[in-house]
Image (cartoon, rainbow, N blue to C red; front, side):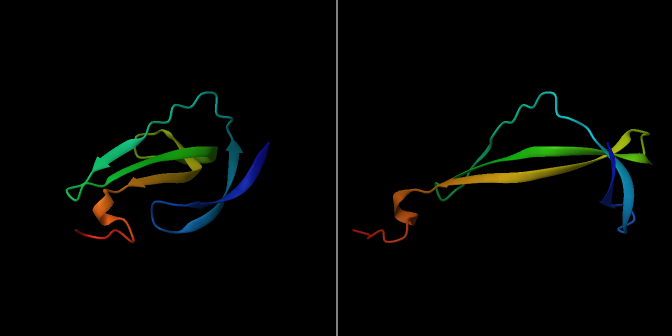
Length: 89
């Protein structure tokens, strides 16, 4: 089913474009992990929940233009000395 979606274009404008929702057949999501010098570990991943292919729009290489709807998930594990309420000896 075609529907009109607002799409940010490469020139910075936002236009209503015809879009087709493309069902996600398979998804593999991995966590990225950062270990910081203060001992904290930050883990994050993006989960894409919806994909729209924009009709008659292409990237510079000629690939179809897709718009995704996603959410970012983040977790933080901090060492005890950085936790709120930690008392130094």
